[in-house]
Image (cartoon, rainbow, N blue to C red):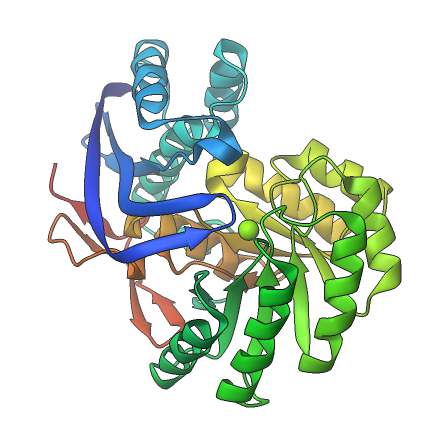
Length: 355
Ligand code: MG
């Protein structure tokens, strides 16, 4: 089988409301959808959702990179996924959202060729994923109201964005815990917003509110600091921006810098390299989570399939598609009830994109 065409298109979907994290504010989901077509009639969809503060990519660089990949990949076998990653990595370093778009589309094709849903192709441990729901940064009082609303909608795990002001972060968690009760799982994401001393102080203050994990408290490069923080708190230390690939995961393991690794397809360059991160984590006895950028159903279905497939990937932060206004452009992949995502038993991603 050979790749005969590779189409890509920029799409822009308005968010239901602007989303604030420590790294900035966003109002639109702007992403690139890819369609790879083979000479045997199989086609697959993929998505590249760049987030420049983390992957160094913009929409324009993703489009340019995909143009180059198109030239390199036409004529290649879409099932030769390791080979195609090798071709892409040799052509350009980084640019992982563009690589993820290709990788996801190849996995969609693989599923269709094998006539099985992607979660089974990847391991088939389960077909269900419980995602958390993110609470963006606003005043602590508003955040608590937002959290209560999300729990009423059926979400059992909340991820609280933090990292702008330690005092407000602590106050937000206090009010949120009060608003949602003891049975809701809470984790916090500081998006690199603190230094080591602040992180230790805030995590100490949060222990009494039963926060299960603090994600990327420190700048991405500070694995030594993360290792210190781990020793000073009972809350799990999660690494996100620090972990792009399996080499990063190995460094984090060697430095004993994390209790849980947050994998994102846009950081790793897709499912295939993400599986390698999980393998490193699993070998070290460290569970993984799948997170997301502002991704649509296409990339979310790919990520959810990986979570469902693997026993060692125990957590999911795959909520971004819910911030977007409804669009008829993309359909399928999964069904959702509250935070519970159930993957469809359709070949590949089970997604249709009108493009
Ligand atoms: Mg994060």
